[in-house]
Length: 282
Length: 165
Image (cartoon, rainbow over all chains, first blue to last red; front, top):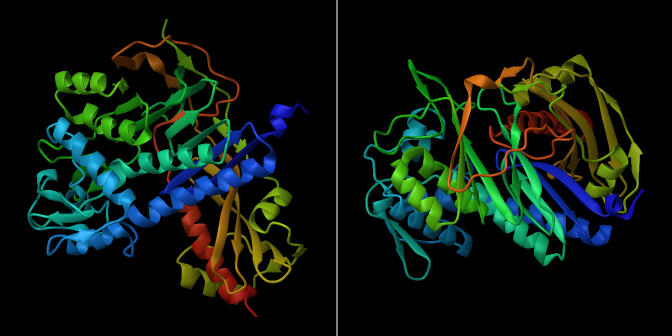
């Protein structure tokens, strides 16, 4: 056994509704184990704050009350909301985390997120003192960005734990750091087999959005977790969009921009954020 | 030439932890004593009713931790995945930690790549038309951990009806 194989820790836990795999290497094993445990703790914290499936989460509290009065939130939730609004503004609403009532209407999110009227990202008001208010009845689901944010938080924790290199993969939304480049395979949108071309990733993130595995029939129509923000219908094409960016929250959000925005605008935003998109299409 | 994906099954298989490593990860420094359980028909019925999950296996691999707590080894089978995992419970039956020990994914059939094209915006990357022997990183098609969530619910009911004293 060489010293390299001895000094890698690799763990997997069910979190964020998927499997989160964390690897770390470069220091002694007890240091790595502590770093990996700390990284999982960060993901658990983000999940506890931002899951709409947990009625005790901060985001659930926000959805219940922010239409009535402003609600103070944690630094993390405020940061994700700021990031989300930045991308929503820049993409003219191609990314919009207020589509939750639509998804709830299709039975894909808890029914308490249903709303009669449809607000948009423009109705989410961030105030000083980390307070959040909704200008009309709406509900937020951070699913399109919080998973990436959790990955980033876990990577920061691994680095703080002095790991030299490592990776965090939350069901395909992933980020790597360290001197070595990793090769990432994209999953085929229909068969789920990895496609032969691999993408090189070094100190960066890759996130993928595809409706192929989540779409289902709902009262005679095909629905999916991805919403066309223009016509508010489900995106159901055999399409898989992956984005490579510096941070995972950004890669995660930009996949929805590429799916929804005008191609010229999407290309411009990818350049602005120094990101690239990889599209597997029929 | 159309590329064909003909990777050997399983597509993706990883072993994270052996039983001993999982025990040490969940109950560091604690001694564990084997305490396997065979469920009776009545227990099975009660567990299924309480958890709303089918009990496929009546023989449970269980360890009791010194000073309190339980370590349970379990498996779940999804449409395409087969997962061995361990659940640590505190002495009063709350989930302490879950560790995936072994993960295998299989997809039948082959894919004809010619129907698909890859488009790239931004810079192009150097295409590398080779499947790695050991595919460690796969992005896309988020796999649901719902089966594990169901499994954990079944094990919590198992604690209630078969482990709790």
